[in-house]
Image (cartoon, rainbow, N blue to C red; front, side, top):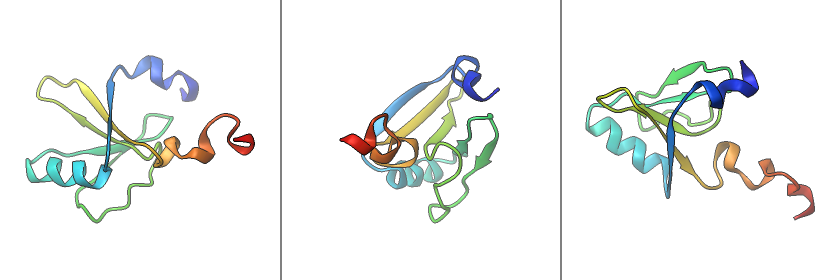
Length: 90
């Protein structure tokens, strides 16, 4: 699956200021956010204290219609500066 994950997992992503803040809000409202790796494996996040370092380092949640939403924090997970192409030269 690997590289094909993004073609197989249809979703939309929102860039947010703080994954921790979004996590807190989602948990307070009874949602079960999770993290996903490039193979599509999921790890649920049940506490605002849980590490956010699994897989892509982003958060996902499904809305009531099962649409998949991803939350991205610039500088976290795969969106760290060191993960960008040509990061060593910038």
